[in-house]
Figure: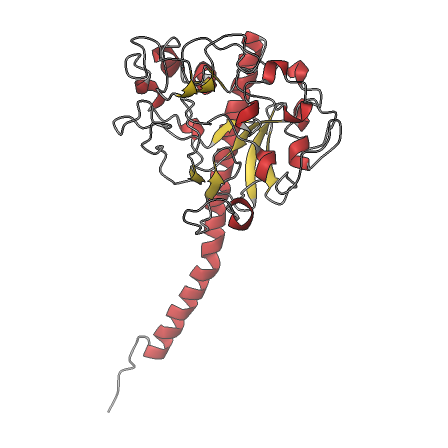
Length: 350
């Protein structure tokens, strides 16, 4: 009697094949994820290069760089010429200079639709300024600009909600009807609210970064060297204290990113959360506060230098966190040295 040979897998063979496939997937998946992150980081770098090029084209046109913003609606008097309130008039406009740069990063339509005599945000606090009559953020139509989302301001690695919280301090009109759009990139500026409007007459070079409220810096001002000085820093869309900067307006203390203050990717509660009584759960990608530099890229964040080049700066780079400011003309931590423009510390970017 002849028996036919059965063709197929035994159960053991099938399980072995499944196990091998599972091992191969486990080995390949990290490589695939790493390749995807490398592509996202490259796109992030390209965004910053585009913004750096926009800054240089603006400088070529206007012979100076723009300020972080103009005519803020908080902590200021309406008297132009006040030592702590230079160059600002009676109206609170809360302008963000990324709007002024729009034609240089291929968003001329947004620039043309924006009313520079009207407000971008209606926020007022501790100020004698008032909103321009009939031209608050809604009346001027500027809400239709600042609620747009140019892709150049969005890091593909940061998938957090790109809309800012509903708040009088961060929404154009203080309601849920209009939500400002967060940016992952902002000007390099000193973090303390006390110094943002001193730039034109600031003599203490330890606080003089490339940008500030009312600044009009030029390439010639960058004595430490344009290849040694930060111009635009990366940040995360999610922060614990306050909110992240918006590309189209300046709300409460939204005045740039200070990489030197706490370093890159600083979300360690023991150092930065000792005074804060809220939820202390550590979440990667949630920076402690507004004005801090960081990213969702592993190991650091991108920054654009004043010469237009982009560098990835490690989160282990020395910062001012837990340290006092160095004396003038004294070389301090690396991130502070590459943030100031004329403190006689031409430190190379790591």
